[in-house]
Figure 1 (cartoon, one colour):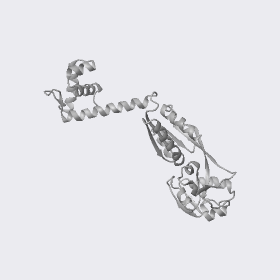
Figure 2 (spheres, rainbow, N blue to C red):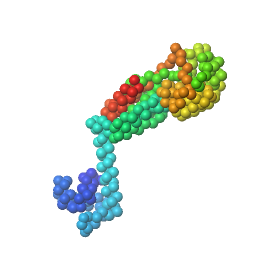
Figure 3 (cartoon, rainbow, N blue to C red):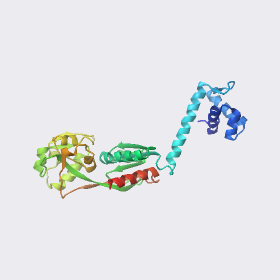
Figure 4 (cartoon, helix red, strand yellow):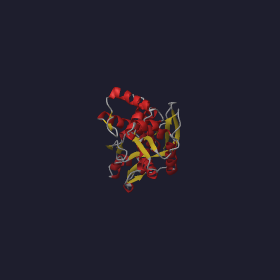
Amino acid sequence: MYQPQWLRSFATLADVGSFTETADRLGITQAAVSQHIRHLEQTLGPLMLRSKRPLELTPAGQALLIYCQEIDRADQRLTLRLSEAEVTCGEISVITPGSIGLQIYPLLLALQQQHPDLVMRHRFAPDSEVMDAVLHNRFEMGMVTQKPDDRRLSATRFAEEPLELVAPAGAQAASWQDLEALGYIDHPDGQAMATRLLSRRFPGNPGVRNLPLRGFSNQISLILEPVARGLGFTVIPRYARLAFARPETIQVIESEIGLVDTIWLIHRAEWPLSSRAKLALAWLQERLG
């Protein structure tokens, strides 16, 4: 690692081409500038041709100048990321399960369209991966369907999301026999979701594992595709259903007996959310109601 003042002297010298002007700009002596360059050259070799006017960089000097520029850009990004004043600049990072992610990502892009200096970084992941990513600072905030009990995580209610029984448009799905006739479209959380909802709607049923399995998809955006083609029914969170592109091909089987999950917003408890994250959350909550 090179001393920052050495690199500052070199980058300024490469810019202005004069030891004297470099010393004046940095408020140090010309001898100090020469000493900084000598320290660098002891490790890197000749950095410039002093006989040329203006000074000409050697290949090693060109490589060091690029290095100095990269450090400068990294310093700017760090300052921007830590600056609470720059609410509409910098990265907003959030990791979520698939259903709520389908709903919020387009909304975050709409916020970025209003503030092009924002950068949205979003990832789909199950609850366990969401918590791990937030704990290890890979994402500033996350959303989960189960409230974590880890004291390092702050968890607040973000939204409520009903589970829905979704069948092909026009299909009968009022009884357990209707569901058996349709067959079940499974997904990674499907067994748990279907068991929780169907046990309430059809008490004493033999269980979702006894239904004919008509298909499986681990892509949240594709789970409803076989349902839309009349191949079976599924149980899925509402936000996933709302994101489906062909709502006319499916139907929600309504019932007075429902089941609502809470979506929890999590972040590291030791420090507050950035101003950019707070802006994004206010934007999302206003539009999600």
